[in-house]
Length: 112
Image (cartoon, rainbow, N blue to C red; front, top):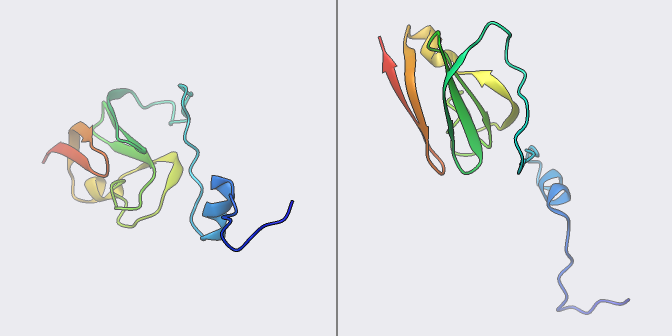
């Protein structure tokens, strides 16, 4: 099969991301078990279009997924397939009470 100048090559999404130097984040259409530390009890959960956040009984916030707009709260635009605790809240002595994820945002209600 030949190609002409007007043809567009189709590249699988995973290869496109790797070629662009962007981290690949798996998007799962089905529920999956998470590896959180055993002593954590999740009291709140919210899902955005490409990220997820949970609040624990102890008031910690964990986030994961696509972080291009800083919506994971880790002080950067990195993405992660693994839940990571938002250290800013811990450093400021704040306890998360509720979390609501939007398409590219995360809103957190905290207590001092």
